[in-house]
Length: 442
Ligand code: AMP
Image (cartoon, rainbow, N blue to C red):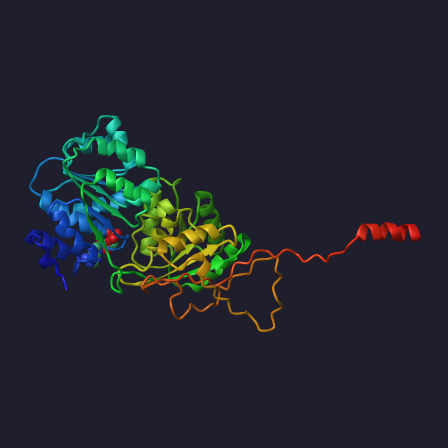
């Protein structure tokens, strides 16, 4: 087993790692650290929760410690992720003399301008805010020698392609580029080809130890049943829950419905200011609130270890979001649960895209597991209505339904989507003519 001592790190760094409580390096750290330390461009396929941040922070700090000037730029998709990355750079960089400045939307431009003028060694920024500073002439990127794209897929999904171009154009070509991404959609590959030179690739082979154990369920149900299903799920689940909804209006709607019944629910979306967002996350982390309702973008930066259950109240717009959402649970070797609510017919396409991305059975081969009947004597359901999910009182399947630990995870549908059957109309030939004839006979 590889230990921290095997990674050619300095004694000071080893002691900082010990202070951080990282007992052994994670697989992504074992593979990436030596490559980054040697100065290669590295393309890493990694999930949040795998220890990826430290896998670039530790070797980059080791490479650049003792040098003066702004050499390192890390781009993050969201404010929260930028702050977390900034904190990890602080933890490992500051004791070794490297200063970090974080530039994010929502923070004060003049304060950031002043911090940038003090020539920090490391800049961690969201692309939009960094472009803002570039336009104002608050920062130059001529000295950058190491450019890091954290969660590249997410940055592109969020529409930062143009800003990324503007930024990379201003950085010398002679540099080290590191790119981390949970998924390698074609647009990520295209970006990697345009900004990296002959990168070494690191892909973490999923193993029992490195893969989160997430039991995944999919419930097909009509829109109007979602809220009651959610209520029952929230009652059944004693642990912490993050609920993802597709828009801020939807987040608010879910929060309001749950909040009426419980006072342990909070929410986070883009209309909240930075302070309010941080407060919501802090109170969720501390246990003051057990349930957090979030949009994709906001939920991305939530780094809480003990989330028991992720609920996709709405099927995500992009299949990649599914991976990011469920990655909030099953962290640090713990097991977790993820439940997705899907509307028959309307969400079929979205579910197919998730299955494709996960490499599960093709839609044609998809397994359908019929829900057990509620009562033996229950009358058959009307074919015109989609079936109601069994959430309350439903035992989780003994075996993970869609386990990330298995070799070929399968998405097992606990309810078969039913397309409303066309009502059977008895064929009455010549009904109108018979009626006319009868009328005339009468
Ligand atoms: P990340 O994948 O960077 O979001 O990291 C997820 C969590 O794992 C963070 O809370 C880190 O502090 C933690 N972490 C990173 N590396 C290790 C390690 N080698 N051992 C234990 N925890 C770690």
